[in-house]
Image (cartoon, rainbow, N blue to C red; front, side):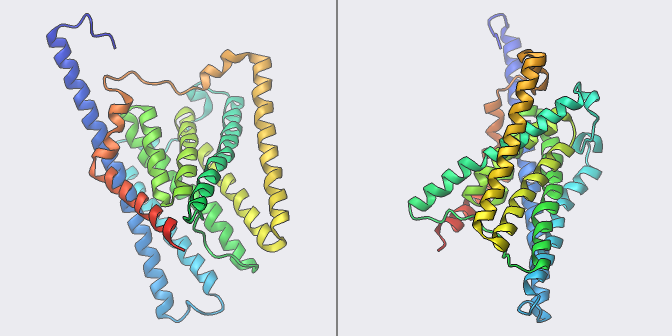
Length: 338
């Protein structure tokens, strides 16, 4: 912003606005951090109580112990969405703003635009695996564990069915409600890109290990972008579900038929998604020209404070700092354990 024509009074007023924006963004980031921490704590508490009940009933070591572990985890996982849903239903902002399901025409998009955004979004989601694998390889090279913690999996149909539900159905619903719904929606007052970035970082920290932090933060940017540009929760939910479902199916195939079958399946769906994404981009370039992509962009809103100044709220608020401690602490734990 050009300050050359401002009087001293105008400049002072501008600085006050800037300070208030930064403080407002700091408070919003802190509240978002507390919301995520509270949701994690509630989920863990419910899962702990359910597991304790299984042990008390003597069912934790029986023939169906793995199946019951999945069932308790699925039930506990659902509680991740309880606090954000209470916030959505009782907060000052409307349900439609926090959990929107707008039609494409309302935000100036066609169905073809949404299809392109979703396919390219899926392509970027899959591409996020590569920096994640690089981080895992680096950690293993320096003697640390780069493995991502996962639930047990065997060849029984019931276990594999619950594994699919646990990985494919529940996370896209509850995590999207929390991060792209309540968290991102509550932060948009301070700028769309601020909301996308903060919600993505919190999403990465929530996963609690270095490899998934990289992946979740990157895909959080993709899902957050889709949520803001389409003003609709469905694209992010569907891509989240598709990504988890394909990865889970690859794991099930590997468990049942060996790693070679799993690898062929993974390479195939990567190739199909990338081919579809590139084809749609090329067709649009040829038919509508490069200027047609401008309508798909999320504009940077003009505010008095800088984006960087507002982002500092994530590391200067209690909720943000505690989320950093949580994410870094668990990452270190998983890296050093044998």
